[in-house]
Image 1 (cartoon, one colour):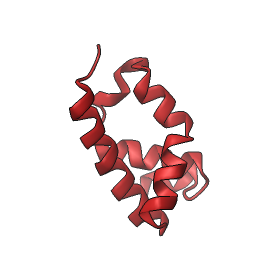
Image 2: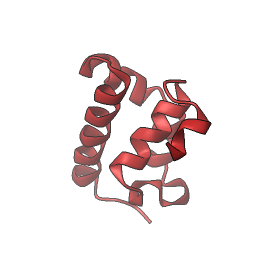
Image 3: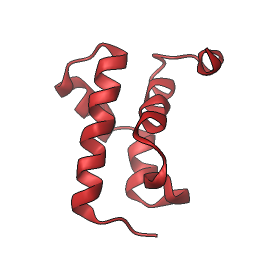
Image 4: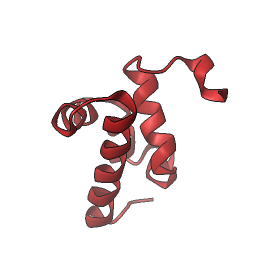
Length: 76
């Protein structure tokens, strides 16, 4: 499924905001990390309809990807 580009950009902004706050990063640093991430590649390429997942879930994936959160911390 292909997402509307304008809606996808708004989703990216929400994910970046959550990621920045939880990783204690500036929005600029979070933005750079987001666009360099494997998570972004999966979302933007429509893999497994990743764009359908919640913003919080996708921000959490970024936290895991960059080591701000350990897999064991997910259930806490």
